[in-house]
Image 1 (cartoon, rainbow, N blue to C red):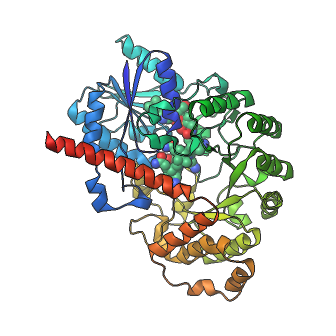
Image 2 (cartoon, rainbow, N blue to C red):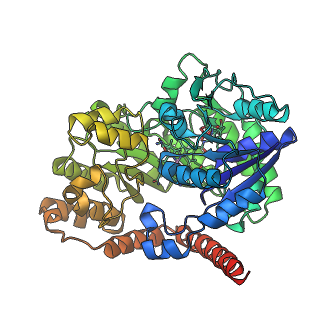
Image 3 (spheres, helix red, strand yellow):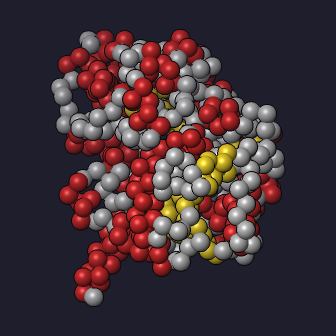
Length: 510
Ligand code: B12
């Protein structure tokens, strides 16, 4: 059968795995990209967005693939875009079935299946479900009993139960990277995106992991790790296939979950792959040995979530178990081996305010990370933190409905001076000074920052225009050698901009 995925300009591992499995069974898989230039919250510009609007091109391209099924892999941040695109496809041909899968439909399938342009929803892992669906399409006999899938049939909603989680991740084929690369060279950018695990041992109240873990309760082990052999096999294959690779990105929630695994992995990684890599961890998953192994193996960047410096709030509001002492120890281990690291901070946590932001400023000045990533708190569907948002009076029934429909701003990336309304952003005034200071902190010597804190100068930071904030971030990135983030974004945007203009020009000419 012919299946066409529609995706924004972000590489997506789920599509790569699903495509690989489908192609292996002989199905024809296509990918259509809507680059959504100048439409992402941190890069939004209404004028440019209109000029580079590619939606007509996208729908035409979908039509040209003559799909038997159109598929979307949906985050909450894309949900409204996905619905709008699905609507345009249906306008062209109502008979093309459309399936939505991914974290958003998994979190709120009851909301998604009600949409008139969505025919099927996948809840949870999609590998087996999509294969069974494709087989049933091939046999031209509709099967409404496929586990993990919800269907609409003659006005009725059919909800099938969820199957057990995949036990052995090694059994999955290598992800189909070419499906993205064939669309634009920008997809292989500088780094290779790979994941070694699925799941997370923690259940932070703001993260989708506890939503997924709840759905999968009783359905097998939630936290799974691929074997070292399997991960290395993929990387060796990738390095050979894509010689332009310069680094590897491993965005697993926590890479060093298992020390024995990490020891084995690093030895082989150094010997057989030997590319700089970046990964994520949790303060409880970093000690002297782990820091040393990561540094030895070529980890050029480690990211850790902290979110707040208040130990009480971390436990009470976020259900994060690590103490400040453990964080100090973790950070010292990184400093000792000169492993560069960033810390994540969330602004807008209910019940937090100036007192907590000052506490965090002091704590960060003590820890001296190479970078602080500041985020807004974004309330994702069904996450526990919504209850806190309600208690704090930020969220009422209507707002919760909007959260489930992806209608509140879902970009976590901080941008001062932004006009779009957000739940936590209504408290913007309370934290914009601190956001600027956190950004500048790695650039300012410790004793000067101590003085700023001591003299309470943070109260005097004037209202900063967005441009100043951007510049501060930009200088910070240059200082840590991450300018490639901007250059690759510029290259990617220019490539798509040219493509869109060319296709618009061709349409006009004909
Ligand atoms: C890798 C990753 C990224 C990467 C790649 C993003 C991408 N487009 O794929 C990067 C770093 C770019 C990224 C960015 C962001 N991310 Co992110 N990211 C992840 C991460 C760590 C892993 C996702 C992944 O690839 N898993 C591997 C695949 C194979 O598994 P999967 O996604 O679960 O997919 C399975 C099923 O869902 C299903 N499925 C998925 N799609 C489909 C489609 C069909 C048709 C079917 C049938 C089934 C199906 O089958 C798949 C295989 O079993 C998750 C956290 C996590 N541990 O899941 C967060 C996560 C997905 N990210 C999240 C967020 C918020 C973001 C950002 C919005 C953050 C920001 N900066 O503002 C951006 C959005 C970027 C964008 N426009 O896409 C949230 C999403 C929450 C939500 N409700 O939407 C998550 C869940 C983290 C969290 N804290 O809660 N992210």
